[in-house]
Length: 284
Image 1 (cartoon, one colour):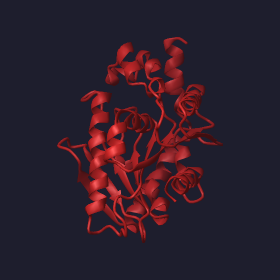
Image 2 (image 1 turned 120 degrees about the vertical axis):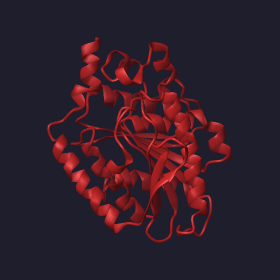
Image 3 (image 1 turned 60 degrees about the horizontal axis):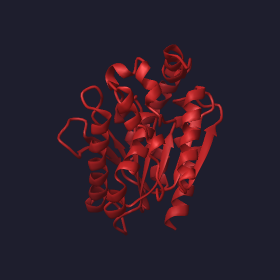
């Protein structure tokens, strides 16, 4: 596959004519959830201005924490664009921490991963010690969910912090959505202007090649209307997860593209249903 093909599969081909419409709907949903749910905004987990998260409190008794890592090819977007994913999950008893993180090219992908590992520890400690949290139990189960670059970071956190997770974090499962798990094709694309990866670095940062056994269950998602490359990436990552003896599911969301699939965080959405099933299977 040549450079032009990679550019189409990972950049231009992912754009959809309904993008502006989808983002306008998301913004309206964001405004609504900020009004109708209880939030603690800009809780810092580090010294960088982007090392912070917004916490949406569960409605009623909390049963778990869900950490959400946003999209943006490791170089753009912000937590404030995705508050709406917390709306129905809060009703189901989840505290939702929507994370920001430093971006490329100011920092490397490795540095983003390291930053977020501290972020996970901070989220867990903050929720366990927050007087505003309605918890009957401490050390609530924690789930990590990420979209696009956030999906890559979700799997990277699990692979690179396995011992920390076992000893310090109560992570019970992950939900990677429309991720890129083999970064090598990105080296020849316009995305690499800010990522600044050479081939060796791309391979080093590709979780597809480093899956091991004894990992948490994973629910992989991708949109039916995404490019073949994105669909194949998620399929291959799910296969590797299972090949190493870990539990994994893979769902192609019908009539959904790279951003409209996020509407499956709304009530009765397939992503919400999968999170609930994951909670039931790992915690009860």
